[in-house]
Image (cartoon, rainbow, N blue to C red):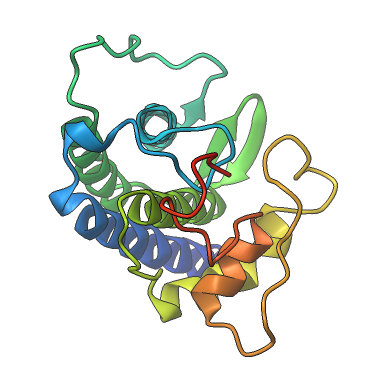
Length: 205
């Protein structure tokens, strides 16, 4: 990859991550702690479990851009039972946006494997955007992933979620209509049913 391609990847990843963070912060604006027992589109997870996972992911991404390395074990201590997980998400999302804006175009080592920072940013954007959709649906909100962001993430998804690595990370793809929106096609590719509603199914998926 030459210097121009690296710079383009960095710019592309920066735009996706920034857009995903902005969208997710809008999604959680009115989410409160009393909703954390609600089921989510992630099978077997309630909203509390989802926030724990996403907050850990944001910590890992911050670590990678701040130090150049993501370790297998997070440096941050486990959350205290009394932690406001929604507020923690907001703080971590904003902090991630700040550290990414100052990140260079070098490599980030993830569990010993070097990756371009732009690709790590794209992976982070996928994580934040799709889990933002999970949170939205769990709270009874039909807010879609913005079409432009979803379309860009769909283009990256074959590289980020290859069929040989999706087992254990994502459910099998859910078929959606040919005229489905980019957001519905994205969540369907990642094993979510775009029609899922918490009120329709007490067992999260």
